Image 1 (cartoon, rainbow, N blue to C red):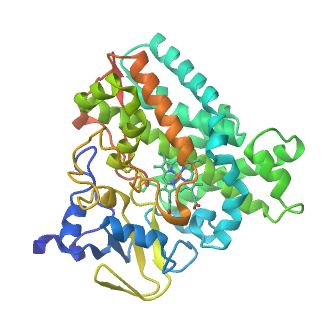
Image 2 (cartoon, rainbow, N blue to C red):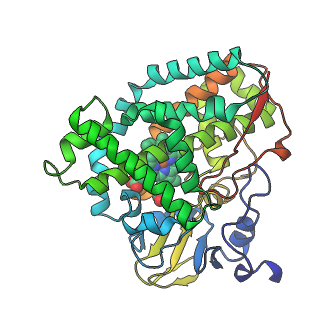
Image 3 (cartoon, rainbow, N blue to C red):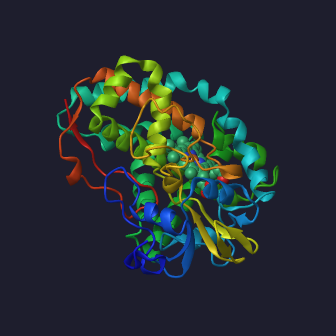
Length: 402
Ligand code: HEM
């Protein structure tokens, strides 16, 4: 690495330069110092891990803790400290983590998710009917990419979709680096109050949905789940359920439109659809740095001596673009046929919603390109507003026409 790009002179998070590729710093770090201590924008420093195998080690070894209450846990967002005071199970270690994960795991099995296919397809069809009947160009994020996962997670949880403007705007405020700690606190407080009210309604009138089952089977005094814990768990599911998938649908559509040869290959052979979704997950790795950890003991990784209490970030986009694991990683190739990417994480915290996300993405892309074969971008890719200051990468608006 040239001296001007020494890890100490960098500040994390870095900005992506091209709409799809990870920040160029990742390649430089992987080549020079694959486990490197870098200053964080919010103060302090953390070890950045850029090699595929090292990322999997961090995410599967008990030497690295996901416990967000440990002092020094890496923070990306200004208000994050408030969530980390009493975090949901994504920021807990075993055995506590497994206790909570087991409460909902049966809601996300292959078999269970398959029963949702007709409802997801119907929602996608309705949205495309409306889109085709409306004016063009249209913002694909607002008209399609956001409502698909939002409708699906609302249905699964039993959250009224009519409230989507309220909770989406508050989530947006909570998930951006542009918010101050006060703005974050206000947004989180409103979301908590909303969920708390919904829990009361489920207690009085339970329905056939995940939240009602949690309330009926697990909430105190019948079960062992405190009310605050249930509130945070439902908020995590609501957020994780659509803030991720919306970015994959919009940015994934854009990646396919910007690679017409790959889109043509997919169109001529629908069997390529599952592989295309995997390749998009790898290529875009939109949840790049959600996988923060803290060292639970002194340990060695990739030649670096990590001390207990040091922050560590297992960079998913860096792993998924490691040429050692994916030859020519910059090539978007729907024939790649590899599923060992880490876009959904790895180890005990690996994404619980991955089967659901895969199904949503398959239905969204196949229906979109079948119903609108002449779909094209209505603006240049260089001019679009990308989500640089948020926890999850994506595009704020995607004007399209046909
Ligand atoms: C965990 C990515 C969709 C719920 C994770 C993790 C990643 C991830 C990287 C691991 C975090 C860590 O290790 O710290 C994604 C991507 C998605 C997606 C890229 C879409 C394409 C979903 C959906 C749900 C969901 C649809 C549905 C509710 C969760 C939950 C966890 C999680 C609850 C925590 C699991 C645990 O700690 O045991 N996701 N996710 N995700 N995801 Fe997803």
